[in-house]
Length: 197
Image 1 (cartoon, helix red, strand yellow):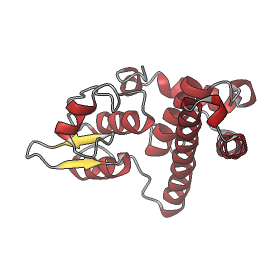
Image 2 (cartoon, rainbow, N blue to C red):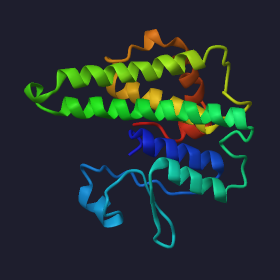
Image 3 (cartoon, one colour):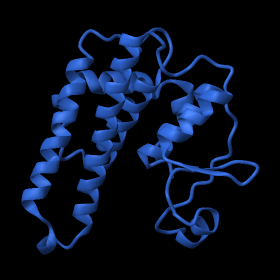
């Protein structure tokens, strides 16, 4: 499902790389048995190749797609820029993980929630977005030139996911650069083609 930041990140990246695919919107909850018949791990995203090979984990799917593409890489090749991109991607992925943890903790009955742990995770989520907000100072458009890179995709998808799921935890007004950056990204045709809902 495209409400998963991992699925959406992989799908947008495949489109940007010009790698054709068919998206099957299966829920790991509502479509568990059908998903299990495709991948016994029931892990999203799952990419099934024509020969039946399965790949899971968005980073691995994107890495594989990079080897097939005749489009420019989504990663900068210059070492300093590549290191910065990797750092930004890792922060965005951490934001995804913390958002998911908050969502799942709230699925528990209120009396079973761990308030101290939830406070810690919320603090980690804010720390991730504080870092990304600072990194976007002076950015007008894309991070590394005239086209979106993996860092752009990862940041915009993470921000959209957090705002979709736990906007009450991360107040958008406190992150104007992230809001503007994500609005810019969401206007790109490959984002528009794969909305999070």
